[in-house]
Image (tube, rainbow, N blue to C red; front, side, top):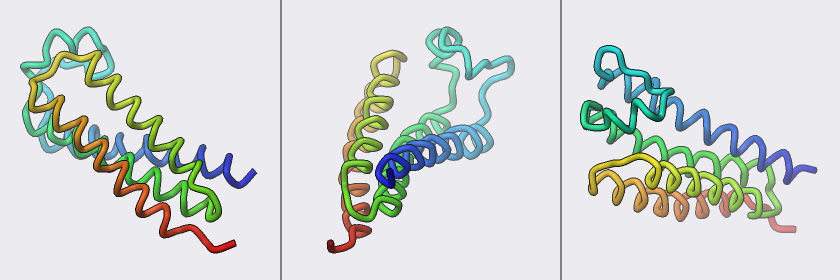
Length: 135
């Protein structure tokens, strides 16, 4: 039961972390153009060139931090199994790559988003392992 809770809470925390970095910080520091609709995928697809570079950088940071924090929290709650952390990490990597393939982006954005997702997974794995207790 603890591992199920760890997975759910880890995933929710990962999503909230992404939201904080991508929306609250990124879009506050680098506002979207007037009339932008960030919840509309068609608008994003058609207007990717109008989104500020800083906001895009914050998307990469958000995905990285979401994976790291989500996996850490899953490990912190589970304490005995890495499975919840791996599930959270894999779901977040899948979401990141879905984003990469669905939305047209510059090459630097796609490469850095994918690379930082994998680095985040490695760091998240390390942090989650440190939370494991010896049984």
